[in-house]
Amino acid sequence: MIFEDLPTTPTSEELIDKAFSRAARAGKAKGGLEAQQSMLQTAANIISDNLENVVTAWPDFEYDAHPFYYELADAILEIPDAADADSGVDALRKSLSEVMWASRKAREIHEEYQPKLRKTDIDTARKHRKQAFARLADIVEQVEDDLLWINEARNALRDLPEINPDEPTIVVAGYPNVGKSSFVNDVTNARGETASYPFTTKGIGLGHFERDHIRYQIVDTPGLLDRKPEERNQIESQAVSAIEHLADCMLVVLDPSGECGYPLASQLELRDAIAAQFEDVPVFTIANKADRADRWDAAAEDEYDHAMSVETGENVEGVLDAAVEAIGYEPELPFEE
Image (cartoon, rainbow, N blue to C red; front, side, top):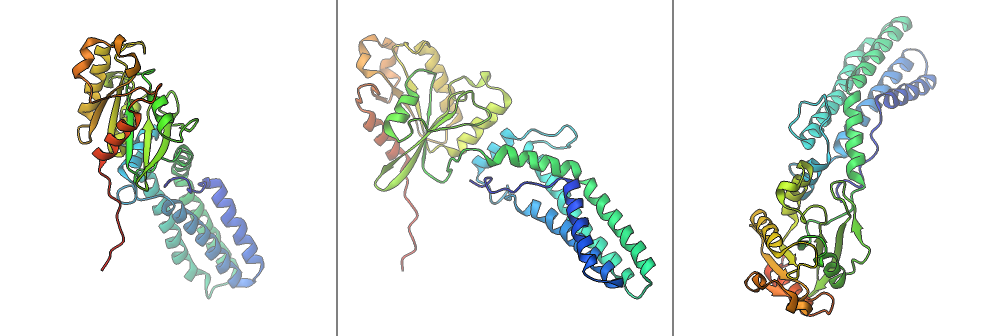
């Protein structure tokens, strides 16, 4: 996952203390003008390099981040009150840009003052070096809020459970208690495997299975795709937009018996809303509890693509096979001459 190796971002105070303490040690190792030059070079390099490393540790959201992770970050990151930004990712980009500016300014200060420390008396050199230190500290303090925000973003994103957007993925949707989680657990090794995201009331169910040596990912999204779009808040809606980039096939599970607590008409309304949002991928309507077909709402007869019973195992593999066929995933093979 592209965020898991993000390092801790130093605070401005930590970075200034680190730079100046290292500079003091460097100065003690030398004497005279050379000591002042070494102190300035050490402090400027530490500040510039550390600030640059803060920026380069992050992926380029435009080119390196899969749209799933781009939208996911946008859903999770809250815009700071003082930020002039349209989205969480936009705010993060602006903070990273400010930090890179500070990195360049540190180098410019070094280049400006280093000549002043040559061919002068020691007292003047010390005076110039202290001036340079004051300006270096001021530059770091100017991006104090940006450093704090970047570290908050890092903490929000780095521990997210991994969902691989490059694997062919089936997303399972439908009202609670229709059998989604049981289906995911039945066809994968997902029992007990959940991915906790901050925008879901329950952990997202995540599992995997193989067909013809190809690994497929199957995802259940309680708290997101088990409610109508108008009932989702802004963050949840944006999270669903992220899942749009993830899904290669949608399975909307119905309980035609209504034992789930929701009438079939409401379930079909949710199905239609999901199908409208995921119009670019195959969407199958799956009627669960086929073993209780005698209790089904008569209106279900023409509304589903496949029927199954997770409880008895009836046609569960058939549903999975239909999804795999609809995805039609073909792995990239090495070029052969």
